[in-house]
Length: 196
View 1 (cartoon, helix red, strand yellow):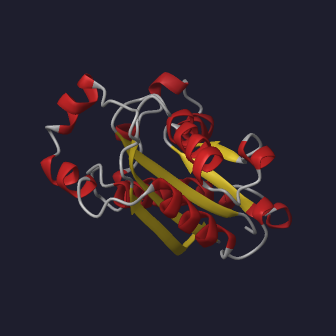
View 2: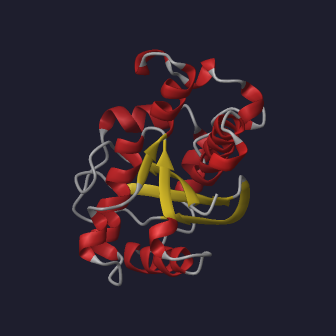
């Protein structure tokens, strides 16, 4: 597998990029089903945004994760510049990167907004041509079930190392990445050797 799979997880103060701020970003890079590198950072909230009340109520259930996103916050310009440099220093060229998330629409929405606005070296046209993979859709196709039934709790827990989601973005990115690698390996093993 020559692609670099970037399992990405955003924690946020709401659900709408630019209306609500991102709180943290965790990204784990995989190649040949193995972790090769990772990136993590905590965002300073954008000055013009306000937290979503429902999201703030939800955060009360995760005090440890909440404490972490309020520690060592970085300016988005600096954090996204570091993310860009990290991503470009991974093996292969940019076209080999595939962003994977669950759900893809949420995390890639925040990724696109923050790359477009704060990763100054990030080519503008690339923001709208990111290669992306929705993990839940992948599992639905693999299992032959409706998307609505392809929930994480129905997936084998060993795929995720037996850990539950803790809403620390680097941990969640790693867990969903491990799950995706298990799915991809399972699918690859079904193919004839010449097609792998």
